[in-house]
Amino acid sequence: MSGSLMRLRGLIRKETLQILRDPSSIAIAFVLPAVLLLLFGYGVSLDARHVAFGIVVDQPSAAAASLTAQFRQSPYFAPRDFSSAAAAQAALANESIDGYMWLRSNFARQLDAGREPTIGVFVDGINANNARIIENYVQQSWFVWIAAQAIPGTAATPIAMQPRIWFNPAVSSRDYLVPGLIAVIMTLTGALLTALVIAREWERGTMEALMVTRVSMNEILISKVVPYFILGMGGMVVAVLIAVFLFDVPLHGSILVLTLAAALFMLASLGMGLLISTVAKNQFVAGQIAIITTFLPAFILSGFIFDIASMPVAIQWVTHIVAARYFVSILQTLFLAGTVWSVLVPNLFALLMMAVVFLGAARLAARKRLD
Image 1 (cartoon, rainbow, N blue to C red):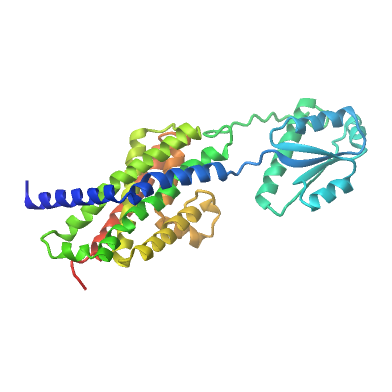
Image 2 (cartoon, rainbow, N blue to C red):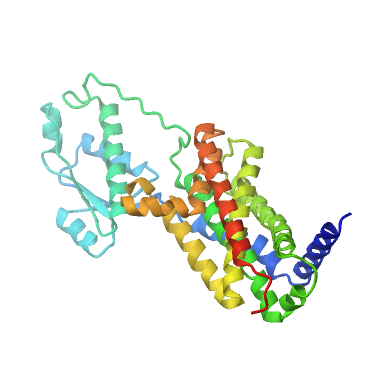
């Protein structure tokens, strides 16, 4: 065995022993992703369930009872009856309900006459996203009821719509969000793992001891990457298992491709952490920089929640330097659609380039000098 390999083996063994003696790195690798995934997985949802929804019927009729029953049976609504539109409006104003439907006194007469009746739907628009969801739910319930009633002049159209939703037929926001959450959380975890290691060596004064030995800077950096890469991949396995077996997110894609993508992404994150640690030389500062430069951009600019195509063009260009953007796309594709190479290959190549750039930048920033 050459001297370089012996030194590298010794450095990796030293780093592994330090990890075992200081369980904070193990906690960052395994506990932090699990806690964050449970917290966000259960807490973040774009679905609206059991919406407090008012129903006002000016004149009871069989048609009105049938339509309101459609809402009472829906899992999306928790209906409340109001005696008048004014009472429902007051409840909407004091936020007791999120919206209400008003069936006016001529509702049944218009139906009987073969005309399309007008129903009033009022939604609290303070939360614009919630308002759009409620509006869509109301329209969906209305169309379902119209189709079931086959009311002349309304449902008797020459078009028979048969909607099919691919990849996420239940339209579950959790199935869509959890894969993205893995990417966002592992961005923070990967960067934090290595952001502290070189800074810790400088703070403890052990980096000076390494500098006066024959070990090269390449050997020092590789010895920092290898143990934390194994830790990071272990954390990734925990996150995927939680997604599949706890949140029931289907995994349709290849496990091998998922492993390859996770390895490339972990190398990019570890490279970013090494670059931060090399420049900062202080654990507190390195930790702060890692959180600000990894978690926040990954949360906002990765496409995890906010659609990148809807962002201004300048911001869309900025998203190309966020590694999580590519990993989010890969995970959502592998989990929900399968191994779609036309989507995976460009994103895998981008992750490879980012890993090379960050690890190369960390190597350029690291100098075997004591100043």
